[in-house]
Each structure stands twice: as structure tokens, then as C-alpha cells.
Amino acid sequence: MGRFYITTPIYYTNDAPHVGSAYSTVNADALARWHRLIGDETKFLTGTDEHGQKVADAAAKNDHSPAEWVEQTSERFREAWRTLNISNDDFIRTTEARHHESVQKFLSTIYENGYIYKDIYQGLYCVSCEDYYTPETAVDGKCPIHARALIEMEEENWFFKLSAFEDRLLEYYEQHPGFVTPETKRNEALSFIKGGLRDISITRTSITWGVRVPWDEAHVFYVWYDALINYLTAIGYGRDDEEVRKWWPYSNHLIGKEIIRFHCVWWPAMCMAARLEPPAHVHVHGWLLIGGQKLSKTMAAEGGVKLTDISPIVLTNEFGVDPVRYYLLRETSLGNDGEFSLEGVTLRYNTDLANNLGNLVARVCTVVESKCGGEGPAASLDSALRPAAEKAILDNVAAWERFNPQSALEATWSLIGATNAYLEQHAPWKMEPGEEVRRVIGDALEAIRIVAMLASPAMPSVCDEIWRRIGLDETIGSATFEESTRWGQYQPARRVQKGEPLFPRIHTS
Ligand code: MSP
Image (cartoon, rainbow, N blue to C red; front, side):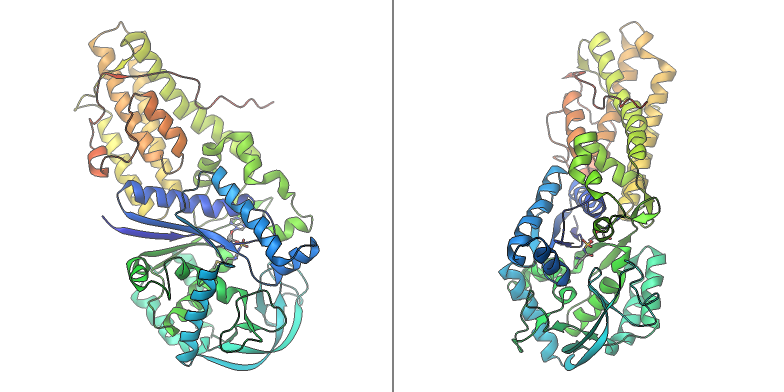
């Protein structure tokens, strides 16, 4: 049994969650569920990033104090994650006292270690990114991501000596080839470092909405500087050393591609400055795009995309929770960008779910009712389906290990395809009741049991329902992974029920 600590980025509370934020969260949730299934001790963290200029501006625009505003928007994230059946073990809010405490402890340690100094900051700032640009990295004086005018800033700030970590970071990358995945994103992070690192301004006096700098009360920490530390707050940094030692070597940050520099350059350097090992892994995912444009809250507010039409809650009302989760995991390989469309969700629903999985379960349960007296028969140990099932299991293990839910689901759907083909070939619905029907259906029931187990990280409720329909009352994951993946574990003579269609077809005109 291993240990697995997985985190999502913490979401800005300037607005409500959208399907892009759901993308990060559902992927992290499926990974957490997989690791629990294989028996790993797992901790899954998500939360909200509640400080910074962007949040303060949104609160002012809506005639709220920042504290009132983040209270409401943070709750909208929790509500969305409850709706999507997200199994996080903790939900961190950066306005919590525990977080302020950890941030102050962490940054004071870096200060005491000599990596923080005071200087004048002069430069260009994008409020939407909460990030700085130089004339070279700006595009026509605008932010390259949001195409918004950059603000000229001049302040006396505290700076972090990021430049001191160039060599140490390169060495860390060399010694830990799997630190950042996929490879293309690792190269991107490496080229940031090789391009030369400048010290970063890490505090503000122009705003008060943030974590106070303990050694200089006139300043608050720059939002990214407090946000990254959330991953440590949640495991007790500065409060519970044993808990930090328990989880930190097993940390996996899942992040979107636009925040690589913060997680793959700044964050490991900050950890080094605090004399802590950098995080173990950073896994980078692409963006969901609509018509080639990133689906971001900022652009939606500017009228580029109608975000309210694609809130995760609206989507689940339309398609159901598990189909939305399935779509988000299956449509795009985790490191790449993917095009989001309602037609795409409908197509996946009707083909993969209604035609392939739903139909498989329905036809098998129907034959058990009509030809086996409603009781599921046992699988044959030399079943022709057994190699397909064993391959699906091995491919799942490899795919989840590589942080690739899409390829895990492809492997599971190959088993569904093989089982449907096996049924077509033998057509048990045309047979007279007897040994032959029982053999074919027993094999199919065993394949369904394995499919439900393998697909459960993606579609937990539907898979539980499939187990109930084939008569299994234990919950998925109650036996060890080794035991439950062994062919022939379906216990015969269980009561099988056909029930309502799992995925009623969506009619498109
Ligand atoms: N608050 C920072 C993260 C701090 S982590 C210490 C932030 N927040 S965010 O709300 O803007 O984005 C959070 C995550 O949502 C990012 O990983 C981002 O990539 C993801 N997504 C936002 N829009 C997205 C898409 N359209 N598609 C996929 N993911 C997207 O950045």
C-alpha cells in the first residue's frame, strides 16, 4: 500500500465555478478515487484562493466587502463540487486562520534564511493573471493571456531571491526526471529556468486584502505567494510536523498549463529556500476551449463566452453527474487542450454510455431475468473474455499511473466492446434456457463486475448502481484490489435486476 497526496489548484473566488474549473477538479477526483481503490492511503485537497487584487475588485464591483464576497463565492465552489460528487478530504480557504499561520511561518523561515530583501518594484501587472510582465513578455503592452491593458506599478516591496535558485532548480530537474509531466510541459518549465530567473516582488502595500507580512505590518503578501503555500497548510505546516512528513514526499499537484511557472519554478524554489523538499510531482493539464478560446472567467465576463450556459451544475442537470464526469475525463488526454461542446457531450453520452455500457448491462440483466430465473450464474475460468478483462486491468493500472484517465477509460471501454461482441457472437437471448446460456451470461456478468470497478473512479454512482443490479451488495473497493481483479470473483446465485435504463438516449433532431 502506498501513499498519495493529490491537490487541485485553489480557485479564485472572483466569480462562480465553470466547466474549466470542474475539469481540474474532476480529474483530480478520479485520480484520488483510483488510488483509494488500489488501496493507497490517499489525501485529496481542493479549495479557494480568496486574496488578491482580482478578488478585491470583484467584491467592490458587487458592492460587497471582500470577506462577504469570498464567503458567497467559496460556497458556490463547494456546492458545485458536492453536485459533481467530488470526494475531497479537505477544502482549504486561504482566508482561514490555519492558512495565515502556515504562510507566516513558511515565509518567516525564508526571511530568516536570508532569501527575502526590500527594494523598489517598478513594472507591469495584469490583475486577471495576478502576475507581472516585462515589456518583452507583454504583447503590444497588453497581457498575452487576457489581452488586457497592463497596469504600471511602482512600490517599495519585499523581494524573494529567486535568481539564487537557478542552478539548484536545474539540478533538481535533472535528478527528478518525473518531477513535471508531460515531457512537453517539463521542457517548458526548464526553458523558463534556463532563460534566467529574476527576483520576484512578493508583497504589496497598495492593498490590505491578504496575509500580513509578520516582520513588516504595512505589507501583505502577494496573492500567489500565499496561495502556493495552501498545499502545506492543509498538511499542518508549522503546526504538525509529523503530518507534513507523512504527506509531503507523496505530493502530486495537478494544475492547468497557464500556471506552470508558479508551480514548477517559483514553488520548488520557495520550498528549497524554506529548507523543505520541493513537491514530488506536478502534472500539467491543457485547457478546455470553446471555438479555440480558453473558457476563462475573465473572458466570459468580458462577453467573449457565455459562461452561465456552461456552469457545471447546469450541465449536470442536463446530462446527469456521471456522464459529465465521464465526458471531462474521456474526451481529452490530460496534457492536451480539448474542444468543449454540448454536441460532444451528447455524442459521448449516446455512444459510449447509452449504446455501449448501458446496453451491455441491460441486455445481460434481461437474459438473467428471462432465462436464468433472475439469478446470476458463475463465470467460467477458461472464458474467452478473461484475457480481455486481464488486459483492461493492466492497462488501467498503467494509465492511472501515468495520470491518463482518458486512456484508462479507453481500456475499460475495450472490455465493454469485447463483451458486447462476445454476446453478439453467442446471442444468448436466442438460446433455450440451459448450461450454454448460463456460461455466456456468467462470463458477461463477471466482465461487467470488472468494468464497474474500473470505471468507478470516473462514474462512482452509476458503477455502484451497476453492482447493485448484478446483485453485489458489497461496495466497490471493499475487497483488496488484487482480490477483486482476479477473474471469477462474481459470486453466483445473486439476485439480478434489470431496472430502468441507466442512460436513456438523448434524442437529437
Ligand atoms: N488561483 C490560481 C491557482 C492557485 S494554486 C496555488 C488560479 N485559479 S483559477 O481559478 O484561475 O484557475 C484554477 C484552475 O482552473 C487552473 O488550473 C486552470 O488551468 C483551470 N482552468 C480554468 N479554466 C480552464 C479551462 N478552460 N480549461 C481547463 N482548465 C481551466 O489560477
